[in-house]
Length: 227
Image (cartoon, rainbow, N blue to C red):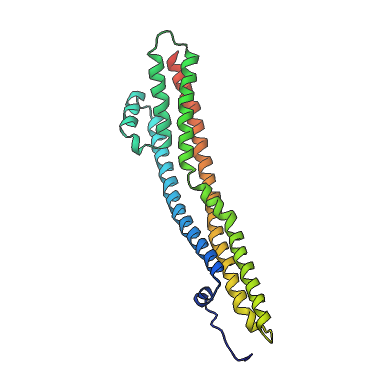
């Protein structure tokens, strides 16, 4: 074996020279990373909008606006309403409907109102939590996918030494380097996904807390009106 033979160790050359399975692993990780960043930016805008709409609605609600006017505006702007506004609409709609029924007990009315608001609350939380499971999966699985590609590439490198009369570091280094790229890609896909998931989970909890507080306070207001 000629010890003066050199290898192109650029990243592109190493990827191009990797085995088919390792290249497939890299392709999967690239797609996972691309979709992760797409969902990350999507959720950033989603939570910014949800927080802004919640702030605007709370400011208007606690400014003493008429509940019937707020309800009509919520109905007219249903497609662009925030979570708090949708919860308010569901609760006030159920409250108005049950109060029109003669002989309806206040406790029954309030129980129906709470159920209506809770159902809307669950739908809003599911909407806000959409795609978070994908980020969690990418964050937890990507390093292992990359590690699988690395192990496979290193195995191929050592198997190729069986056909070499003299084993040198130069003979095995390119194969190991291209295999380690898979691990690097796995970490590159996993780290942003984990960081984003933790941040968005905290955002969901904060909005959920605001919704819980609003439902309790709004229930008290409706209960006083029912009496």
